[in-house]
Length: 223
Image 1 (cartoon, one colour):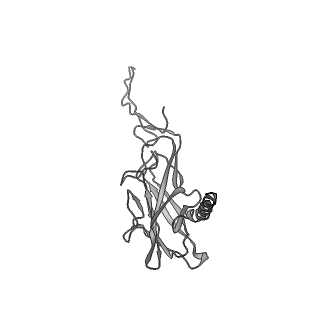
Image 2 (image 1 turned 30 degrees about the horizontal axis):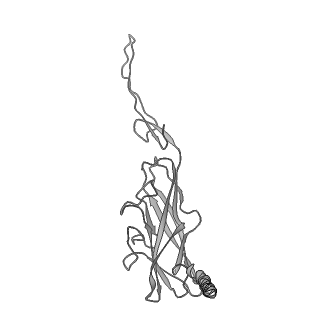
Image 3 (image 1 turned 120 degrees about the vertical axis):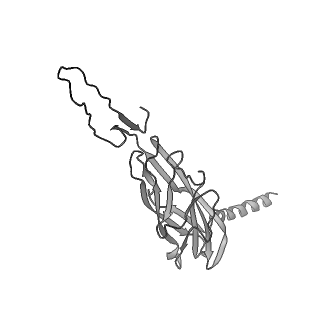
């Protein structure tokens, strides 16, 4: 019995390193490209280009088609954690092609970015420039918001699909958004910094002339 148990343990030990290799490719957003700051009071949207690094894991792979997905937001309304919504990701090489999805959409011939690897070890790593955008003017409380993305992909060897569709999640594929603590005060409507109060003709006999003034305050923290 002891010999059988030892043999089984040895087989498991030999199999473990092979099981650690996931899929045919690995994806990572480089550096702090998607560590962003969002000002809810700004009229300008957040626009940021970032680099997606793709590494070939299976030497048989000659190309990979991939999508980036928001897995926990309602379809059509991607949201960064519990923070601002409506963000989008585009592929710089073809901005009209769908490369960012929600729900259970999988890569196929009508969507996704198709990227080819080079020959030999020197072609194992390719990079693609993507573009992140987030609409301006959304209500958002001060704080940090985090959204993990999922890479969904399928590899090819020549014209043939290599294995089955796969996916990858992790800290290397995430949006990290900070909304700073901020209070802004305006005269009248939001965005107006100065104004004029017209009292009209004043009575020469004296008296008090009164007019009302509207002050608008916007804040990302309670006040």
